[in-house]
Length: 500
Image 1 (cartoon, one colour):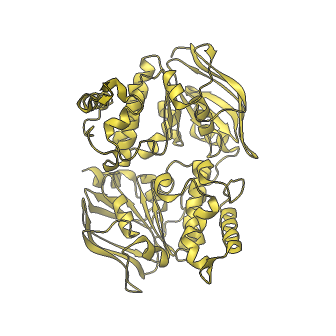
Image 2: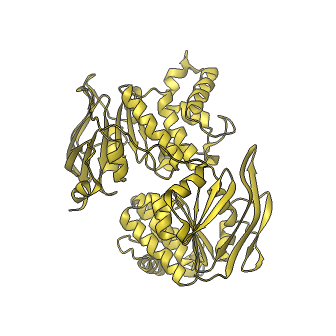
Image 3: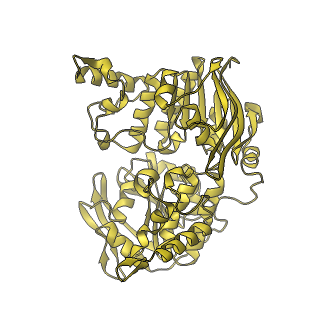
């Protein structure tokens, strides 16, 4: 690894109102280095990366790029200086093509006399996608028609097309399947081999240790330590992140898979797109895990169970009340909650307050004579946010200014406030730190003990094994295997039914 310094960050600080997001942070990024950046949600990781690419300005401190003062005013400014970033959530533009997204802001390189040569742009987009090893995305396709993962790969192709000297990867791998992750890892290694630099932000400690040369740990906006490869060890990094040893496991310690015989949610003979004749019974007091590869159809199944998608055939019913779930409105009225995998796009209204988001499913409860009781609204939001320890300036703070973990707490708070009896959780711990993971896992156990039912869709086998009473594995739109909770259940036993 080369030791020439590409980027120097000196004493950066940033506050958002009363919240100190970053405090006197200094680090040096070298050429040929993959630097991990890790910390709990709200530790300052995204604030630091957003300062580096010009999305926000620091309150104090300075940066040097290749030995010269560096003050980016926007992401475009950072691009001009050969710094590209891929963010955790969606950064593509809706209603335009893959090619137009890939060359957004640079279209005129394909222009003549004020007109864009679409054929040339599509050809260039195809070449850019092939350069990262993606041959299945068509440049002419509307970006809205491709999967969330493929949209992230378009963002990766766009970043690589900029030929960056520094690539910042902010929690991107959480949205990727193993195949997508391997593409990302290969691109990172190729940049390193070209003596370029990567700042890699992830909550996956094993991933950080495997992929990074060094790792910098942030806690409460301050830099705690930087470890070299030989110093990296999971428990040491965890301790640096949260300031204490993790003495308890993430997952349930019991191996009792008992639950009520009462079926509270029945999915019967459902077909939709690739889903083929899927039937599931969810029982009171049960955590039912559904796993598989990202494209197996399980995410669509969760949306169908909440009424977001209409099945081509089959039904979703509440047997005890003989009610068919045909829409989210019917689901919410009957105490079904849904946590989407794509938090920022589907679970939250980012430009509105925490209070508004939390109270949205509970408006009927809060109404008095057809008028929303504002006092009751504030009490509800404060109560559930306090119970979940949402770190915020107040319930009036807009959700866009929260860290990923606190956004996820707000999503959970919506359905706690509505006192949901059935909770559909799609990748509930995607992109959140170990502290918030523990909180969500404990909450799931508490809800189970109260007789609530949880349908947990997950791409993480340890999560499925660790939390579920029963596990259904899906492959190519069908249920390929089922397992009961057991101390002897292993990932190897499950994975063959996902890929064989």
